[in-house]
Image (cartoon, rainbow, N blue to C red; front, side, top):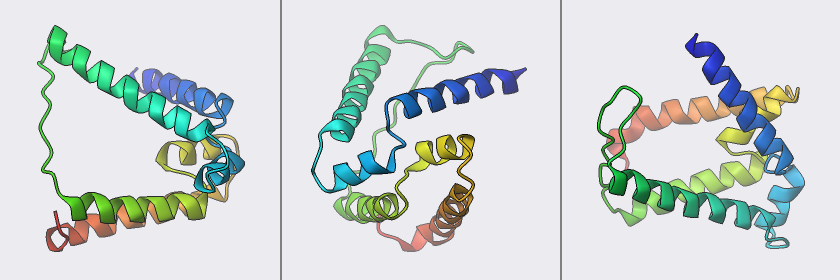
Length: 137
């Protein structure tokens, strides 16, 4: 039964990503060339909504569906961590034209070449896990 719930959420996510043109390679290219505000507006809106939602969860002391307290753990601030990770993420995004969410949306639209990108992302994630103890954090 959980599968149906998550499948429905995934389909809704794919529809929103498609209708907002967040999966459009041309929109992503415009963003990296600083030609259009479209993607920056969407990303900025997501960041602002995340800040508001987090503040509401903390202020209202909301709980999970199971009644557990929602806890936020502070991150260790590390410039190399975010700088190196951001550069690698941005390079992958600019080369493939898709970040993790849109990859699966594009696969759902029938772009089978995205399987290569998904496989590459999985390999990259595996390598990060294998090398994590040797990387600056």
